[in-house]
Image (cartoon, rainbow, N blue to C red; front, top):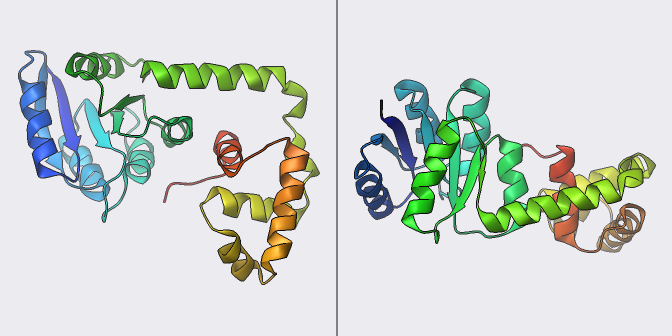
Length: 218
């Protein structure tokens, strides 16, 4: 039987092009389309495809990460392959945290996309080569720094609040307003967090929070 695929992308031309590409293969059948994450979840639960090809960014509707997390919670048997233009390890970890089975770049060759769909349909994970390299490097670093895994416990309650807000994308000014403190105080907390966790940049803090599972995708 053909692999039944639902395509979720906010661009009609992209949806149409992907549909023609996938339907050209005898073992793949496109059974539906969605223009945003909300519609993708609704149609997936109705149609029950084998694989959802999910665009990561679909403004102004629900994004692919949130939709993936909701879909995997409601229907764990449906495989999600994320299609994105972002070749960044930060996105890789967010995709995996949301429950996707795979990650492939929009710039990838057509045959790689077909291979990715076949791979996740078989219940295996598919990571584009550059993403695989990032994941392996991150894992090796975690093993090397195994003694650092409980560093979060040495943070104060306020530092934990600041860390999670930073990871969620709030600016120092926005965090200061939420916590009713000065921007200088937020910057001080951030410096202490970075020092305690041995991190160097804001993206490092985001990746740390993602790996710890502190971020949701709602």
